Amino acid sequence: MAKAGIVHLGLGAFFRAFGAIYIEEAMKASGSAGGDNWGIIGVSLQSPRMHDQLAPQDFVYTAQELGPEDETLRQVEIIRDVLVARENPEAVLAAMADPAIRIVTLTVTEKGYCHDPATGRLNATHPDIAHDLKAAQPVSAPGYLVRALARRKAAGVPPFTVLTCDNLPDNGRLVRRIVLDLAERLDPDLATWIEAEGRFPATMVDRIVPATKPEDVEALARKTGRYDAAPVMHEPFRQWVVEDDFVPAYGTDARPDLGAVGVELVDSVTVFEHMKLRMLNGTHSALAYLGYLAGHETIAETVADPLFARFVKGLWRREIIPSLEAPPGTDLEDYADALFARYANPGIRHRTWQIAMDGSQKLPQRILGTVHDNLASGRSCPGLCLAIAAWMIYVGGTDLGGKPIDVRDPLSDRLKSLVRDGDGDAGKVDALLGVTEIFDAKLAAALRPSITSAYAALKADGVRNTIGALS
Ligand code: CS2
Image (cartoon, rainbow, N blue to C red; front, top):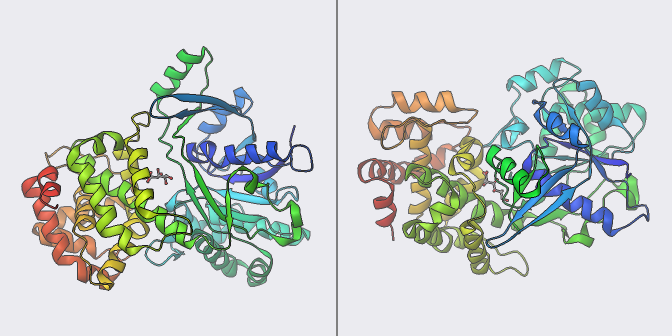
């Protein structure tokens, strides 16, 4: 059996349906010619659930690819073990310090980086970071990276490459800055070593992977006659663009042969990442807030509503594409058409509520960057303003018919009370625009009038009438 070469922090459905499959394919493609030592040790930072589900089935799970008409099943066998950081931090640090591990991949979601989304810098007052600055056994993802790198330095082992797979802007440089900032506070020599020897390639990751629901598990078991406690469901599409900048000390053994299985290895991912974060994730969030408030449960259901179909196509054409530079060989209109077909795939039941989670961590890179660029070029962006206004209603915790919303967001208590205490529509909008972790003050001032009227229109006329009046 292939030995482990990768530790993955944050083993959720997305990575199991994406990176794990690519890496398994890359290992198979390079056969036994030294390319077979990229097994993955998964780490859950908090919950023992993934370990408890996967251990009895030897960490093998089913990936169910759901196309619009048909589906295929495969068994993924690349996971070697799953460690639960909260229960055994020492085992996680030991695995990360093992010289056989050359890459640490991460999907810890936006909030897992413990940074300030508006500036991209480490939030040193974050309780997990405050803990990790004192205790040798960390709790945060940046804490694990820094403490494990310290062990490698002390043992004379080169660092691992840190390969972030989260939807953050300039994700490689972002995690690098956060790691260096934390290391600097703990031990400046360590920071100097990481700066010189460490590598943090940026990546653009793309595959739609809704959370697996209990009914999916049951349906799969009925279909196959075999019970898999932790299958993943995903769309056929996938795209992974990776900066080819891995720790040089490992030479040709620094990464799996990802190029052999269609991963695009490039010098800079910036244009790919802008396209994906703004065109996919930006409209995903817009459809999530507006769709949820209009009573739509999934993205497929939302875009099956003709008003929303027109709305999202208008967002791409009028407000997002004009802010972008196309990556080489990509036509942005075609990319938009392909996205629409992916959203419409009825096999993928991606809940608007799921995508609406953690909006405070998502809005800056998904929507606010586009809005900023449009304003700077004198273009208005009424559809994106409507999306921001819908987020504002959503985080208030009550839908337009007065029903409570289960808002999941690290800032949810604060956001809810800002909405509750704000004086009238204008006061509520103003209070939320004042959250500096999300909104830059200049941008907030420029947006105030359009968001206030969008907010009032949504409340007075409802979502469908308001988006209908847009185009
Ligand atoms: C989604 C993403 O949940 C969300 O916020 O927008 O997970 C999206 O499905 C992926 O980035 C697609 O690559």
